[in-house]
Structures are given as C-alpha cells and as structure tokens.
Length: 226
Ligand SMILES: NC(=O)c1ccc[n+]([C@@H]2O[C@H](COP(=O)([O-])OP(=O)(O)OC[C@H]3O[C@@H](n4cnc5c(N)ncnc54)[C@H](OP(=O)(O)O)[C@@H]3O)[C@@H](O)[C@H]2O)c1
Image (cartoon, rainbow, N blue to C red):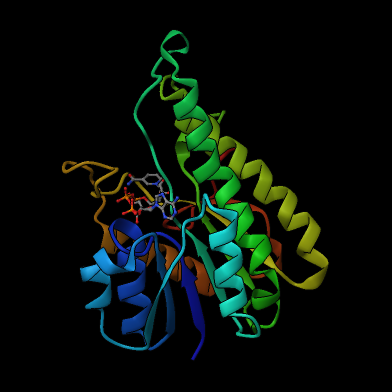
C-alpha cells in the first residue's frame, strides 16, 4: 500500500487525514510537535507511526529526514499551519507574529518538502500536497488578516517554484484550500467538517496527473484563482 507523511497530524485536518488514509489501508507517517501529548493520533488504528516534527525547526526536520531516509513517501502532506489572528489591519501588525507565521506557514512546508524530496521521488505517486488557503488568493482578497493572508500567498509562490524545479523528476505539487473547516483554527461554526475536507482532498489527490503540477484547488477539486 502507498505511504503518506502528514505534518500537524495531532488535531484538526491533519488528524482526519491520518484517520482516513489509515482506514483506507495506507501506511501513515504521522508527525506532530509533541507525540507524548497526541492521544487522539496515537489512538488511530492501522499502519500508523507517530514521529516528532516541528516544521519551524530545521534540526527537527533534518532529524526525521535522517530517520526516514530510504523510505518511499507517495504523498507528502504539508498540512501544519498557524493563524495568530492578529494584525487585522496594517496599523495593528505585530511584526513578531508575522515573522512567526511566515516561518510556520511558508519556510516550514518548503523546508519539509526539500528535506523529504528523495523520499517522494522514490515513490510511485510522487505527490507533494500543501494546505494553503483561499485567504492567500489576491484575486479573491477582501482585506484583513494580513499576516495569515500573506503567508499563504507566499506559500503558493514558493510551491509553484518548487513544482517547476522538480517537474522534470516527476513530482506533482498541489496547493489546496481545504474549505472553511470546523477545527480549532476554523472555529465551531465553520460550514465544512474535517472529515469532509480530508475526504475531498484525498479524492482529488487520487486523480492528480503531471498537468496538475503547481495547481491551486478547492478541496472539491475546483480550480482557484491566484
Ligand atoms: N480550518 C480552516 O478553516 C482552514 C482554512 C484554510 C486553510 N487551513 C489550513 O489548513 C491547515 C490545518 O488547519 P487546521 O484547521 O487543522 O488547524 P488546527 O486545528 O489549528 O491545527 C493546526 C495543526 O498544525 C500544527 N502545527 C502548528 N505549528 C506547527 C509547527 N511549527 N510544526 C508542526 N506542526 C505545527 C498544530 O500542532 P500543535 O497542536 O502542536 O499546535 C496542529 O496539529 C493549516 O495549514 C491551515 O492554515 C485551515
């Protein structure tokens, strides 16, 4: 069976991705910052191994890349992210929060993608998926949330560059808006559940081909404007 590696798998969308891929019989390399506190993740049944990974920390990323060296990863799911919900207008920006958001939402996924590229290249599917957001779309911008929006816009450009760089080696990169999802980040009244979001993205991933490299999609597969 194929293998998926997921970042931020201890709660929210990442936990649901781990549950669903495992239920489908995939091997799941589930990563989170603190495995000792990830009781819901460690309770997921199936072929699931839980590893420590802080995407902000280059040493943590390198340590796991060393541990998993030589293991094929069909789908690398860069899901971990933060939204500190500060800096709603330009005058209110907390530059420390902005830098931290860029670290986790942009540098982290790229750091992880590069560290695990040989694992993905060694697989048959060769997919790198990234949880972006419609809030990173300039075409659909309604203002506010500048720290989070800019991080997802920057992520999209970085992944687009990554896709161009790795295209000739058969890698397919895809950026998702997972929906407005009922998680700690999305809030209790969000219209999409984590199971719906994860199922949608899984189904889209199952259909991806080389022409999808560098695409930005809703969780139901609809193309999104940059
Ligand atoms: N929910 C939505 O409506 C929505 C909409 C658009 C996009 N997204 C994106 O979807 C992704 C998942 O969101 P979610 O709703 O599931 O959020 P969530 O419930 O807040 O979960 C975020 C996950 O990211 C992890 N994380 C944060 N910083 C990390 C780091 N430095 N290293 C490793 N893991 C880290 C968290 O781990 P800890 O438990 O250790 O903090 C947690 O597992 C994010 O990238 C988010 O931006 C969500």
